Image (cartoon, rainbow, N blue to C red; front, side, top):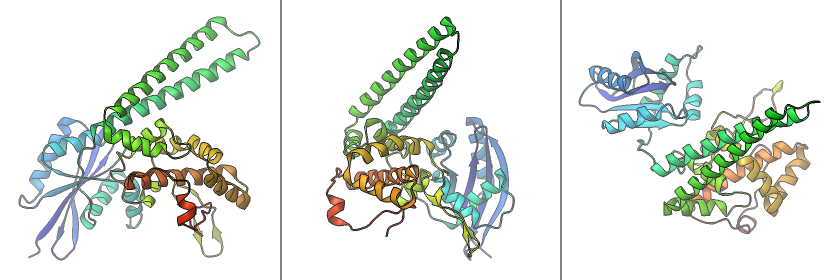
Length: 350
């Protein structure tokens, strides 16, 4: 008789519901996903989920809970399971999506997604999740709040410009829009001050921000965003995984000699990371000879400036990860002395 050696509960997390699949692996390495159910994404639903899993599982074998890092919707569930002494495994979305493509699934639904997560958990090893440093969580909330306020201010500025361009602008409308912009400016200043206070309150975070800010073009807000959105690179194991998480990885469609699509970034990742790197990339190109040379070489090759800027964004992100892991500051002479590699527009080395 086959013996159960592993039990996994895979959860596809949405804003309002949890689509769950339950599976097990046997001692002959065969696996089976044999139960499905949907729960509400709140505390009552979490408790119902635990009760359901308890009825289905073999008590002597630990159940591993797997889920994707989907924005913020998975966090309450992860904390609830962790506080109830369950092993939680949070996997980067690109790892699940890449794995799911290897399965023979023609129709993608929440149910098949939960099955793919369960199957991934049964077949792969993953580091157990533990709650990140509260400072990173607070920092992420603040940098995202600032981003939302900046977007609202941009909308107000565009409306003001449009109104002032009218043949006969409405004075009251112009006045209200100016007040809105002033209000948004004040809020942005307050949020940035809170971010500063938060950084100064934690020596480890302060050191990390100083390391990242040693890179040309990278300022406090960029460093804070990168650390916050990656939880201090907690789930990141290598540079390739990091660029994929940010959606800066290159995808290319090629088949035989007849189908050859142009390489382009996937954009299937953390939009806040990508957004935070645009201005720093322009700053690095302007103020650092190494990045300026890479940019010039790429533009000379394909003539597309924005494509070259994206390549610089990717290099900056990888560099931040390297400096954080090594706990070293940026040395502009290090790369010239230690590597002869050149960057291509698709992120490869030549």
